[in-house]
Image (cartoon, rainbow, N blue to C red; front, side, top):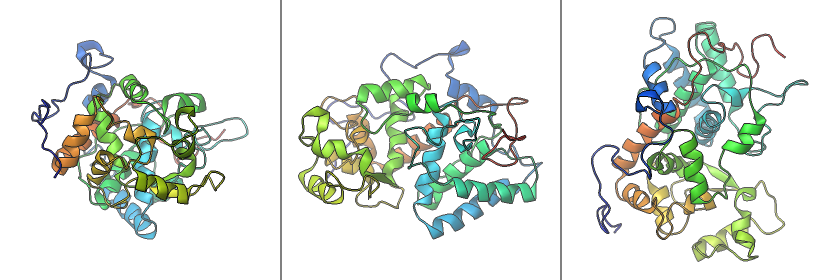
Length: 345
């Protein structure tokens, strides 16, 4: 049985009472982070008058896509994370490259791995047919990310809406700010703190890896040359190591995939954290959350023991992440097509 939180001196208070070293990162006037400032401006029911069917349209189109391909849910959830971590939650990741513009789709963290763009296109087309020029692509991503969790068995929440779409994107910031799969724990904590997110947000949001897959290219170094040793990562479970070596031989196809949650890969639950406790995390950046003396280990144990607590913290973290530096009011635009700004380059 997984030990209860509290063992070893770990307090398990109500609400978001987990400690963050040094207090809240990057305070703004009044003590609020950038994410908290976004939450204060965005609001549920933003389209109630101008497009009351907006959220139901998003869910209907997304559900059809998930029924055709179960991986769609994880793809959409990942798109929002990769969008918000660059310029903010502004749908910049959705912009296509053109002959005069290089966007984020071909940045290292997204190239050959970011998917789900066609589903977003379908949702946006349905929304434009219902209420032209009203619902932003950034809000489509936020709603679809929530529904991706719900459709795979996870929690629901009210999505704060009112974002507008960016006029540009940044490949360089995507390369710099999206944490790579071989990140160390200090690197992960710093990357999240830079966005105004805490250590609780880091662990809770990483729990989204309970659905989805990873390419061999993202973890092969763990199998054959961990930290330049030319040996496997010593922390990896031996049975998992053998399985991953079979899927990803040294000179095999880098695009081959394996589930990130090896037991319930298409169900949004807390088993991902159980995997970490058993040293069965696939990515380095996942397994470092449960390492000796890691400040995140107690959170992993708490979420592995209590799915309801994981769901509670995941929802709060998703709301916070989705409010990072939104474009509001007259900023940006409402794109007609998510792949291009209005008046294409």
